Length: 416
Image (cartoon, rainbow, N blue to C red):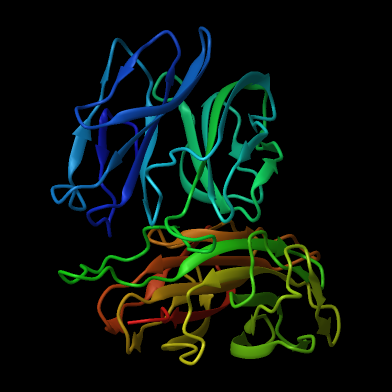
């Protein structure tokens, strides 16, 4: 949940024992004070310009979704930030390595550090005192961004990714369109238990029973492409579900490499097609492994590979809907799922020069802008679902009318 006020809000899906991380970007001469029950974890400051501070709290029974906490600032802080929630974190090792950084240039950087445990979650926070647009490092999933607004609020961003083996973690840089001041904090969250548990950002709005936490699907990462080559994202291990999708010119056929199975496809004749394939990762699907698709002609392709953990691949998909049309509202059509706590994933193919915005309730998992006679537009987003049943249609927005095709499907969590 992002904010530009002094009030932070507990996100949907939080249950007792989850780790809450609240962070603010603010004007550096100003001091920030957290409400009772919150502990400062890390802070970075560029004197006279910008600061980034992260606090934590272990959710109690009173931290129901929508609960608010109010920070105080010693003056006009131009604050912006957000609250993130993670489940399955070992609170006794917090953080499992960190690094604070600052500078003035076009590359706000999460500096290098080391962690002591495998399969950590890496979380990076950015404070930005710059009017230029900002792009997160490409390997991070966006967990909440607020654009800089002059004399209103600083820029703020947070992103995460899964790590593999313990050890030295390389620096990772974002990109500002114009030079500016920045401060960053990056830290690692250790999973509870043995070496391979999977702590994840909260993705379920379901309320657990009195003795069990609902199983949820975990998003691991994604890699976009405009070539015929798809790349396995960072953090993938054997057993993860890989989804590869392409947007392409509809008269053209697309053929996946060996080992990939078509899941769903939608097509608008003479305009745009969207096809999704899947594969269960094996030991050979290490991050950076590539697969090459073939097309029956000039396809103007664009797409991405996504990775998910904890999916029941015997129920794939747990409901779906394919759609196409020509308008300013590319739509994921309504369908039903049979199981609770699914993850909803929507794919868009866009044959339009207009800019595209995903439905506001979806987290962006990989977007490629339309480029005339180069590639179609491509986008994919997801959200958590609650109880099983009918799922309403969900529409994005094009700034100009164009042809589109969409696929939406539900991924059932493994386990009860």
